[in-house]
Image 1 (cartoon, helix red, strand yellow):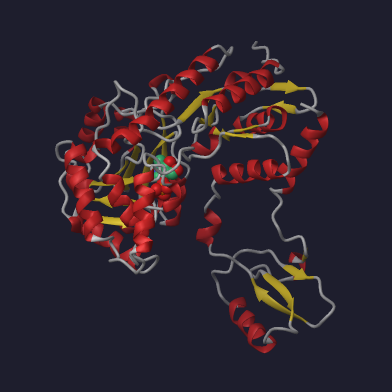
Image 2 (cartoon, helix red, strand yellow):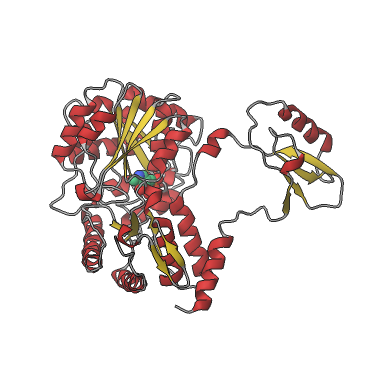
Length: 487
Ligand SMILES: Cc1ncc(COP(=O)(O)O)c(C=O)c1O
């Protein structure tokens, strides 16, 4: 790649990570250590009111952030407390979103980056679903729905869970939300007390540990290695559970690894879980339909003794290519579901009425999404096969063949410690992804975002021809790296 393009990428990558307070001047040294302030020109504001509120906050013990800025202005100035909640400061922003944004900025700047970072199907929402949404608008179905979702949709979800997953729920045991992400967060907030432990097998979906932190709980990460197909070892789980363990979060098929838990492993996990009366399980099954036979999906709640303690999460984003419609749901015992419903009632209220009509149509498309979904799964499988073969040829790269979802989680750690002319040292997943972006023009996500720094994640929700081009670029970039000589 031309040096000029690499320089352009470097400048976009670095400027997009600097934040946007360029018109402000840092002023922290002049201010009390417990206060964080912005000084504004008071010409357009009620200066008395704002200054008074700052005086109040100066005595507020929870104000711990010490950073202050002053607006460039010639006119009279006033100050404002800009400190943030310690809860916000404990949460890391999503790396997948950050990398997707950087890649988009590069594309907009004219750099032909291939974006394989986002976790989003490249297919359009099936027409029958889209039509149902359009009809909902035409028919004036545009008002608030019940907080937990329409009875029509919750009834359809109960039918789906019974027929496809062998788990029985009634509509009052379902809450529909603006995406499975909201469903999971609400469940974590509903059941965790400060200091509780949330057990998360790694590699994990980026949001689980941050959700635990938002609930003032402690994420406990249990690593699973590529040689075990990234599956949690039930013995490791058993050894780590304490009376503080409140939640175990399972994800199958998995983002980022594509691993699918075989039924016998889930049964072993269930036997361990059953020994701990405080322990609940969130079973994130959002990739359920994107699965490659002979792998078979098992719902954790269908295992003996697990219904009472399992919160089953699913959604429409992935299998039905409905990411922008924002619709997911949670199912579980009424006691816990009512708590999730309560949180939702004081935050977002019910999900979109239009998306809910569309979701009813999605569930009406047949078993496991019918023809339209199996057509997408077939395409995902072809892409997976291509990538596994393409990367299988690369020296030192370790692969666990994904059985579901649309991600490949490759171990590139063989190349860590390499020095590349014109780039520098590659010593972790972050520097390797930066190298692939700057010298191969391919956007991927570093494994450390998912709790495993040996790997990087490739999302194969892209046309086969795009993946072929990306694999070529990655191989070319890899061939210019000289792996470190081991002693
Ligand atoms: C494992 C997993 N769970 C939940 C979600 C949330 O999906 P949504 O909020 O779009 O329904 C995602 C999205 O990337 C995911 O990968």
